[in-house]
Image 1 (tube, chains in turn yellow, cyan):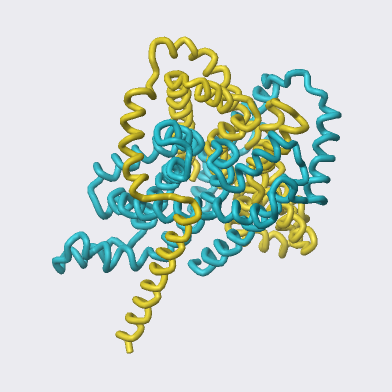
Image 2: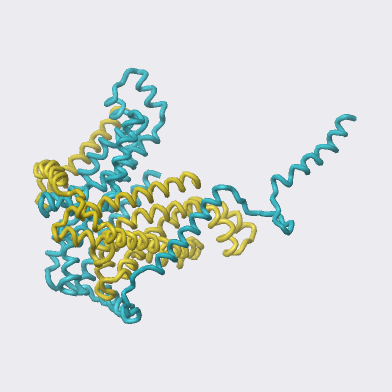
Amino acid sequence: MELLVVKKRQNYIAMFFILVALLSYGAMEVTGFEPAQALIAIPQAIVWSLSNFYPTMASIKNLPAILIKLHETVFLAIVATTTGGICAMAFALLSTKGVPVFTVMCRLIASFFRNIPDTVWAIVLLLSFGQNVISGYIALFFATFGFLTRAFVETIEEVGANSIEALEASGATYGQIVFQAIIPSCITQVVSWLLFMIETNIRSSTLVGMLTGTGIGNLFNIYYKFFDYHSASLVVIMIVIVILIIEAASNHVRRMIL
Amino acid sequence: MENVFDATVQPISLMSSWPKLMKKDKKGKIIVHSTDAKQNVVNYTLVFLAILTVYGIATFDYKKIFMSKAITDTIQNFAIMLTEPMAVHFTYAEAFGQLLMTLSLAFLTTVMGSIIALFFGLLAAKNLTNKKTSNFIKGGVAIIRAIPTVLWVLIFAASAGLGSVAAIIGLSFHGIGYLIKSYSESFEEMDEGIIEALKASGANWWQIVFQAVLPSSITCILAWTFMRFEINFTNAVAMGAAAGAGGIGYELFMAGNYYYNIREIGLITYMVLGFAIILEIFSNRLKAHIK
């Protein structure tokens, strides 16, 4: 009997792998991707990077311009995260209030914003706001809002459920429940999510900047298109340094609060 | 007699220790909120973020934009986009073909990424290798993850030429970093006793991996992989638009930046949204199954 179960499980696993292999084959046909080419491309890319993609003395003089744009991109990410976080918190509180209409509405709206990629927002906003930091901001804001609403709803449901019930039983008003139970018990998780989102948003704001012609993404694009790979590599190095610093800082905070 | 004496003394000694437990403010009111170090760090972090936000808003270069006009334009654009989706420069069949292309890019990226990440994830798990190897891999992963996906794609495009190879390899890097981290974390959650028991019975490393580690964490791995598939799909759309990697993202870029066609953007948005929601529902089911 047990052997049969094991055999059945093995069959499932085999079927799963065959399915994945077939789908991969189909995907390769559609995209024209050849694994052999990919194997050649990696050493090729390493050789190319070592001979072209490094900063030179000439590119160092672009550093002030890079730092100004990097400053803009980093702060774009932070502002989009905090403002998006505040709206997401309001929506998460509304959707956990227990009124079914609110819950469904809030979740639909959040799902809508979460599932439309920031790329789409950036392109649409570019048409009305032009090459402006605001188009990037709104694109990031929408994406952040959608993502954090889901994260906060899950946090509230996980952490706050017991204390909400206890306070409801003792006759507390909704405001009291929010400020005495939900926010105090969720705040560490919320801070942790915000820090995570800032890291993610710095990467996204590079992409959004590329699309909307602002910030460090656009600067990279310009260097890249004019084949100034030395300056482009300096941009990459600066982004890596900033992201590693922010990651280290937020990990430090996370270790202290969680 | 002694017992009675004790009973009268005890409450007094307890009373004297109360002020240490209950803090009072200057007016003599008992402070109900805890003011421990944790809470302070949370507060400082929030205040710090608020200051950074205000500073950011104050120092952005807004370039004298006409806000009211831009906002009304945006609302009009959104309204047209969402209510009148239409295909102009391509047929519906072509659009589906491009969506399939993006989906295929995401799928290949996920499959390739998960195979590579599985191997490195095993090496990065502290309970399966030594601390040194684990830290080395995790450090490398941190640097790989720090570089945005679009830059990976463009770097590969510069050496290998723009095409599906550059797109898939570039897309894979970030995904591999993400999966190594999450895989190794789920391996580390494993019961230490099982590994020890297998080691004691003389099983080698591969046997431990295939008989104990993989079977017990397979559901977790599947959930993480599927979540990555969702992200890869979004990224594949973005790479089409930002790096010209083909697929529906490229059509989106053309519609927005060359034809200025809001209706076409609307159609593409609905297609992407529809697929993203299907993927999310699948992923939620998978997660619920695991919990």
